[in-house]
Picture 1 (cartoon, rainbow, N blue to C red):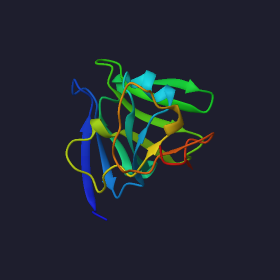
Picture 2: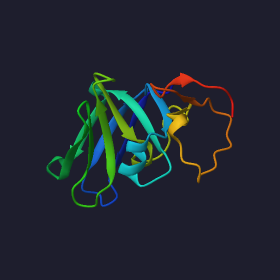
Picture 3: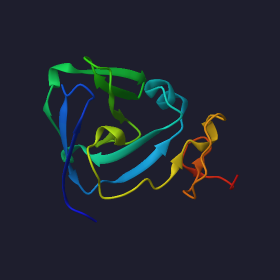
Picture 4: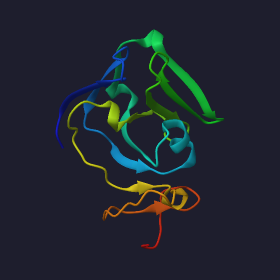
Length: 143
């Protein structure tokens, strides 16, 4: 895997961050909470250990929202860009919105998760694994 550092931030530039590679995963999430939070059919997340993620600027602009009793989402209080997800299900890990990362990372998306919850109005025709079920990451039959 590629090693190095990538950077990113929000749309208005108020928040800047760095990520040390390698990442743990990159996947498209189709859960209803991600869809509503981002206003999109699905969201692509990149997971990294907390120690590999650093906020470099704009910490005072970062807003956190408890999207459930076990998870929180972080966004820019200035422009509203959704940036981060942290949840008890993935302790010690920060999930970063792929679109907020500038340039290439060490991997492309590897799967669709929460596929069972996807919307019907956005067609997806790739060959990536489609995972779903109760946990969102269970193998499901090809559709």
